[in-house]
Length: 401
Image (cartoon, one colour):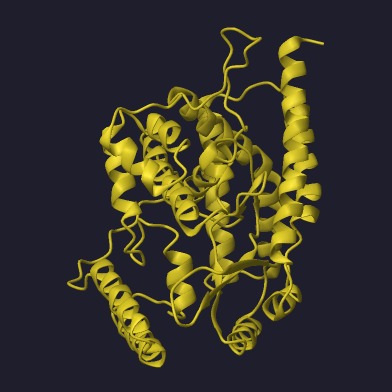
């Protein structure tokens, strides 16, 4: 067997084992006991079952197409464009905006399923080449001159799980998260939140754009731009998992925030570079009308006010304020189903988001400005496991080795 192929298969086997172990560890972490865990367990999402169903299928598809004849660039672009046209048609039909009935919807879904693996393969290849150019590769010591992206870029278009986020009522802190199966309707979500809140905590069921299983899960009806951004975001998590920052993900609130914010900053820039090379195949949409309402400033001001009220022990006052502001945001065209302590605790993990006032966000932005490229930023950040180390990186010479 060719030595490079042997190495690839060996690494792939290791990745299978790590994926299975990670799924089990995550499930054990979520099933840690207690009333909230028991309530969430009724709607739990089985990570291991998902891994077993999808990982092997992806491997078999890739092996079966190793020697397939390559399509021309025009053909590839046509496949991608057709796929996202079909996705838009399905979304319109499911929302009752299409002029045709169930038969056409079934046909569209069948066509999407037929194109799905090919489009995943195309986008994985394009993202991989971009990551190679940014130096986000490994070089095995016994294979001089050969480097490759690892873990391989791999995602599955499917329905991601939802997340139950739990925070204490008296402060904003992400105490627990539980993966919930896709497809819960609003009455089920609200009933679960009410039951969890009755335990004296604040809870929120959150829809997410992706989950860093392996392959990562991305919503099957995503548009081109959000899909690419999510795939890159989840791959950055895969990359970080092999380095000190990712291994420290669950150590503290700061390490979680560092991980999520690094992934946000890197994926936003990497996706932008990909869009320059491969523009969106979807029709351009008119930019939203200018508004005098500054949502980012308003949300951050609310977060500060809530923090102050909670610090003074005025929990009910803080909760009334969050609901009043939520209604104001809706009147301004920004729909948010619920704002509570769990909302801020979960959203605050992304320190570059409007719901965060964490200084980690600006510090990581400063680190990106200090590095020469987004690839160097990821390599440097991957070795940072605390705010103190981040401050040291900003103050002194950079090292990614």
